[in-house]
Image (cartoon, rainbow, N blue to C red):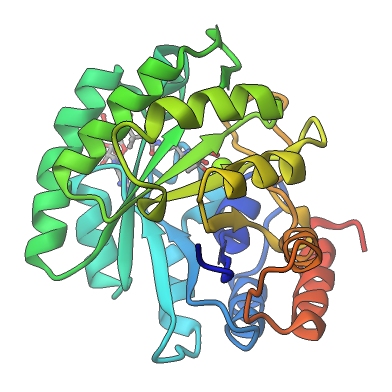
Length: 285
Ligand code: HMG
Ligand code: MG
């Protein structure tokens, strides 16, 4: 089993999308540029969603145009529909992500579609992305608990994971969107999901509201997962998930997995610089 753990940095997207104050585009670019020196292979820094729904991400094209790209880093963007994909291609995102939910309540609140409608909407997006040579990642939100529907049946998560796999997503990221998951619930969910997709094609995406994200990562490591999404400085939340706190902090994941004997390939000094920048952007530095 690999001793390398990849942290997929999502701070510039998942971290910043929830901020109410207007963050200058130049600050977002500076954060991504700092992160580009830390050793990440993938950084999610754009979201081509409706600016009426998430105003903070309205400058995603400007961010992608302004960053200094490292050739070995994939700069990723969220694309909920064809319009989002067209904008992502025009802005030269290196990969895109479609995002669905295991719960009907969150699906409706977040992307204004039932689960079935969203999967239909994603099919042309994945086909067109693949035709344009862009890898597509899939997200499933609310893998253990939903702010609207409560506890989620692991079988519902497995069904959405299978649908994203069948569409050709190269990896599916499992979101504990409101960060209330406990290790036992994560283990039960993973047991169901692993029937559909091997651990090598799964990622953990744990928000840290309940302070369980690191414990949940340990459970996922035991199940063979080696990719975890995180945000420097613990930035974040989802505007359509009331009560959701930030993503688990990148620097905390880095320290924990190193203590467990894994490698990340990340430069801790740069991570701490980026975390300080992120906290300043949030206004608590
Ligand atoms: P809708 O209102 O049903 O869409 O929203 P519509 O197709 O009826 O269009 C309405 C308007 O939006 C139109 O403009 C469209 O042109 C425009 P109008 O005619 O009114 O001026 N529009 C767009 N504009 C720019 N880019 C687009 C786009 N699409 C339509 N791509 C929609 C449906 C999906 C667009 C909307 O619900 C939406 O944007 N939702 C995104 C919500 C979001 O970004 N949530 C946060 C990201 S997910 C997350 O954080 C979870 C994750 O981290 C994992 C986890 O933690 O679990 C990934
Ligand atoms: Mg998230």
